[in-house]
Length: 203
Image 1: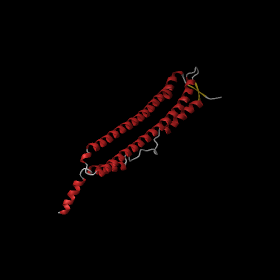
Image 2: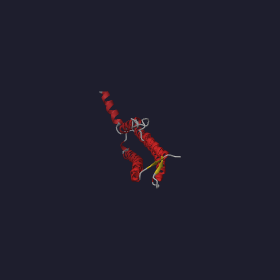
Image 3: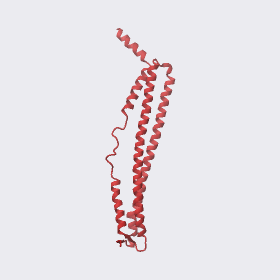
Image 4: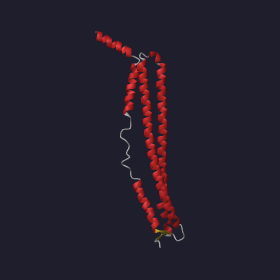
């Protein structure tokens, strides 16, 4: 025969508040934080794509309007090509970072949701016994609920392996942006620069 624990009638509400209501509030707060974090990544991703699109438009527009002032079309198109490469490389890199972060959050969200579902099912089993006329609960069901709550301490423990990377930018992208800009700007005065250097050499 299963051992039962009797909860006094005046303690029923306190029992529910401690093991039920407060825990449901914590669940709501936790899942809401995950939801807000995922939305934040989503809108950051959209904002980044919009910014990159605007930059591409500026570079393309600059190329067409300044075409008549170019002294070396070869350097101009090389510079433009490097800049576009850097932009698309940066776009792919940042999207990869956002995707990885989103997938990590999604995995954590699913893990918490699965635990909460398991905990809620165990609590409902206890609660149905609690609101019976006798207010008697099987000890094994209480112990199972306590065991699940202990598992939560491990669930909420920070994972030291999944730390954020220290480097949050791409050196290759910055290097290409710098080189591309230098080559692109030099296409407007490369011959003037050569003439100046030649004149210095002649003297």
